[in-house]
Length: 468
Image 1 (cartoon, rainbow, N blue to C red):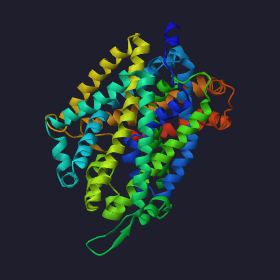
Image 2 (image 1 turned 180 degrees about the vertical axis):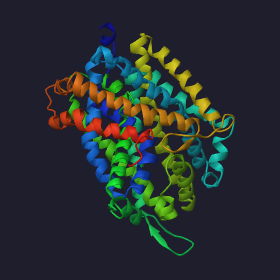
Image 3 (image 1 turned 90 degrees about the horizontal axis):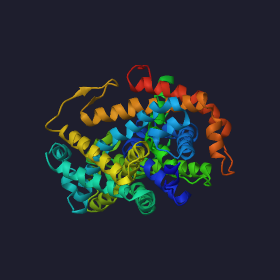
Image 4 (image 1 turned 120 degrees about the horizontal axis):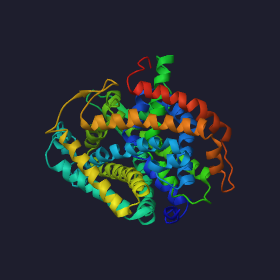
């Protein structure tokens, strides 16, 4: 009880919403959402994503935030507080951010590299073939930039919930939103004539993005799009990573939980949509439909610099704005990932925030250096169960995102839906006298629909289910 009394909390719902939205708006939104939308028929993906966000995503987000506030604990210990025999699920939930943090900081270092390149007017060089590969395979520079990014994240977490996480979110998130909106508007106004004389515009790219394409749509393809949209929600809402349990534990008991969750959903969905508006029209205008097939690092660090270079002098400015926005998004997400681990160490081992943060910084640094070495000294290729070929970063990403996160989400659904029953979450949401707007939907989702969808997603992720 002593531990709980000393626990910090967000000063208000705005602080919580901005911090949680900052966690949700990360690299997954920026480099994965636009690619999936382009690949999966534009508007069809958007419609399915929106439906899932309001049902499936809402269910997982509400559950995790409510678990956090009810137990006033981080993921490592929260599940054990809900039901003593379910503490192992908390261990798995805590493992996810432990695995994610090192490689996320490596990618954060990559973002710093490109931001510096565009700020110093070297955007043209950054667009050259081999620039990205030459950088990530270097011995020293990726490690230095990993340290720069990691120590910036650690500094925010060191400062605590109010002076660190909440204060930084209140500054960074409005700046991020302004940049996202500004780049999106610019992306819609551009026009380009290629070497063959074909004129393409940003508005044409926008139509490809938002208008559903049902050409060649089969039942099998529909389920592929559905599962793509569902897997994206993990990234978009930061669920099944222990993050929302940690942030939920800092929410005051008199806060309107339902209202805050609705605001997080809205903020995240808006930024995810705008990420597509920023990227798809610009890539289509300068690279055609073929350019829209890139995803992940190749989209952000190879395709987009070429797009900025093709814009001429203004490209350096837009490129600098874009990578500043990406850096803000990466920072707020990395802070939440680190906080999930730090708060877990504090709750389980009763150590100070400083000590817990130092331990996690050392773990992340060691893991990050290993990831950097995976592109030079320790380079190898391994075929993963889902058919992809990867290095150390890809293996860590696969274990955390494709295997552990669905397991955590399935376990959470079983625990809340069938063991302790949904009333535990419903009572927590309604504790402050607020209404639970989608209560009946929540019960059906947590007990039946979400577990089934999650099992299918897990089987597909680990390569067992190949028909979808």
